[in-house]
Amino acid sequence: MSDLTDLVAVIEGAAWQWWTASPDLVPLEFSYPYLAREGSAGAIPNPISSVALAFGKPSEFVFLTRSDARDVPPDWPQQMAEDRLDFDLFPTALSFELFALNDRDRQSRVLGIPHREQLSIQRQTDPARGDHFHLAFWAGEVGARVAAEAIQLRTHEGVIELGDVRALSDSWWTYWRAYWQRRGTAEALPYDPSCEVTIPFK
Image (cartoon, rainbow, N blue to C red):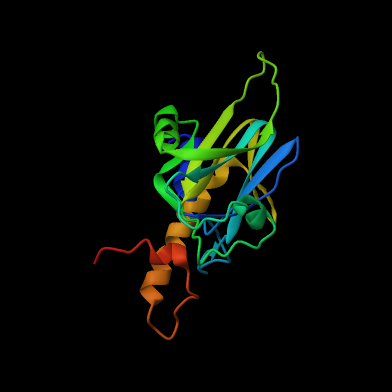
């Protein structure tokens, strides 16, 4: 798999939680990615609670709302940016197969769902430069699309190189196995919604 395919695989089971935007950067934050860091020898890996896809030099950033959405507040983007959106009332878990990063076929499916758009950023780009990264996704009844020159995966501890994503994903699956082995025992790990939606076969 390519680095971007690995990236999609660890993000598309997450939930969109926050965003901000400037002319030079659009970070989108997602909670509960399938990523974990190795601990000390023999220790259970530590899950990474949230990551941001940071789009550098964006040419376009647009909010999406499904046409058939009910009771979604019209200012939901502002509420999300200000940490005021009630995720219990308006869940924003990403929709599998509807998270498209540099995937034209999947992006067509995302944008083919009837929706209305709210523009945040749009600017002229140098045709010789172009946009190397295109993201479109649905998170419940809302979503976004972004076009930008660069992309980074960030945590509160710093940048994760895209080439390191697969190893961190492998560590998450080690953590996931430990989570389910200990679930319901005196050694149970703290509740993790990303583990709960990925149920092992007996």
